Image (cartoon, rainbow over all chains, first blue to last red; front, side):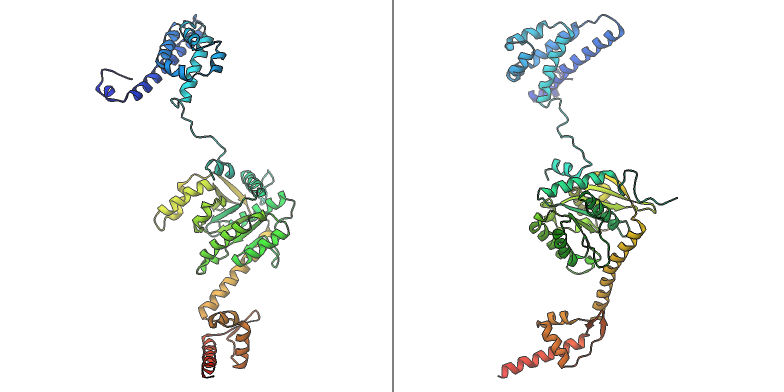
Amino acid sequence: MVDFNNDVTVGTPAIDVVRILWLQRRSEVIDHLELYTKRDAQGVTGDLSGVRSKLFSLFLEVQPCLERRVLPEELKALDCAEFNALRVKFRQAKTEEELLDLFYLINHQFDDLLLTRLDTKKRHDRTRWEIDNKAGGQ
Amino acid sequence: MKKRYFYDHGLPFSEKLGVNLVDIIDRIKLNKAGLIIVDGGVGEGKTTLALHCMDYVNKVHGFDPVALEKKFHPQLAMGGKQFTGFLRICYIKKMVIVSYDEAGDFNRRGALTRLNALLNRTFETFRGFQIIVLIILPVFSVLDNHLFDLGIPRGLLHCKGRTEKYGNFDSYSLAQMGWLRYWYDKLPKGSKHKCYSKVIPNFSGHFLDLEPDRSKRLDEISMEGKLKILQDSELEMEGLLNYIQIAKKLDRSVVWVRMAVGQLKIKHTKLIKRSKYFDQRALNILADKLDEIDERRKRK
């Protein structure tokens, strides 16, 4: 957890602190989605307010980055003509489907930024010499 | 229980090896080098596995199993001398695979350098032959770094722990062989063989024995090569030389040596397979004759 009252955090480069903050916010959204899914499965009427607020916080955190990186096709897929429309959508999204679509957008950006991507090595059939050699550049 | 010579899938070795052999066949079709190494300790079934692989490649190409006649086995070269000749025969007969069994070659001085030079030349010159070379060695690391740098060996089959019913092998790709070589260099003398336990094989497999008839014929071929080496080393120990060796030592032609031996009536010490062998005394007599000739020339 990032603690701004801690001297260690103050001494940590801003980029590292921001990286942790983004992941923390993302994790909180997932936690709220988990809670919502659990209640839904129990037959209790779902309450998405937690997810909505957490997702909006996450959006505020990554907004300048999204503004730079989101592709026109991605905006189009979310029925947004321009980035301002997306901003409104993040604020006003209400249904589970809308919220998940927006979350996926951010999730993909994190993956693209290698924030959440661990599988940087391509998977191949190791039992075949030629495929393994090719993967090793030989 | 009746002894098995084929698994249920119809092959005498693990199916995965068959897939890899087909990959190598596809590779050589693109005029790329394809060398497979089979290594392992004495009696682990290196030659048997190599023969299984060759039979399979032959079958894929519609050829009969590898010929194992005592006087005709062009796909199974015993020693470096046979290898180049057999490679040519295989090319002419459009065969796709040839093997090189060191057959005790490495006990000779300079054999490794010769082998590496031979392989380098083979793969640089005869790549277009589109022939897979299977090389059977006690330890794969005797091969030159240059061969590995060029990416010529494509796979290694390390035979180990052979039982009465079947043999076992671990298989390594070129990429994994790099790690094997790393560990081989790093480990102390006497523990070098542990490099195999440091690297995870790409896959492991088993192979069955050859059918009794083929196994017997293979033994005969392999023993013939080994007997020749034994005979050579026996002659070397006794210091005996034939016409060719004497000619090399005296820097004269074989014809000159034959004539000189006849004129001086030098008796041979041993006669092996119609080849005459002479002792050191004969060499000294011939050397004296050479000195005499030189002196006579100077006086003129």
